[in-house]
Length: 305
Image (cartoon, rainbow, N blue to C red; front, top):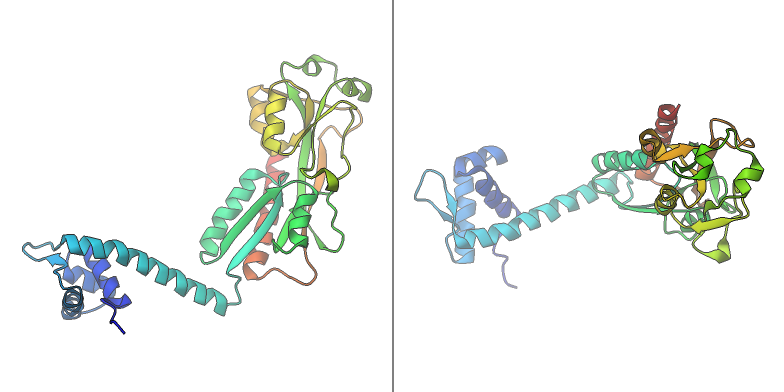
């Protein structure tokens, strides 16, 4: 068997010298005497059959051969560090990967903040995040692709374990140029029924969830909130969107708030729930993220108030 040209320990020495600029500084970083650092370099140079450093000045420099070895050494050390983190995670019963499905109604900024904090708290866990609508989220949990999901009240959660997460406030809006924006308030159901209502709908018509909060017989169907918002901004109809998503548009006057007589003036508060499979409880990282998502949802509602 051919001997490896360098050990992981020697590669760490090479990287330390390249980053600190001297054998002595590398020794201090690695908590080793300079003679041990010099010995590691000499062993590598013997194995590679080429000098890795130029030692003609006070600050050592990599040779072309050293540059080539360094590029690979950094990758090897990074992978070794990742493997060490994974081993530590497995020893703590931490899942190596976490699949999560979140309904698009969940506040986007709160979701991004939770993911940022997750990356810091669980660096060894690979996060696989799915954002979808209505019944699709529960389906991802039911078929085992996700450890848990965050669903709205319309989702079919049969066969899943259900837990309360929080609420999201939906508000009806319309473009400032739309006729409804200049009308009387509150708006009667008959008047709203005359205009196109843009409705969030399932991607798979075969599994379509019953409509929620639909007051018009004239509907346009979309499958994501981004498209719905853009169509509303174009004045193509009216519809409900999460308050966190339209706050900036309302403040800038691009969208106008509607007050249907049939609904609460503050908007409709939809309950968000966590769903899991009864035979597959989330691990440590999953439970941590559920708690963080609950905090984010609660904070978003407090800001909206």
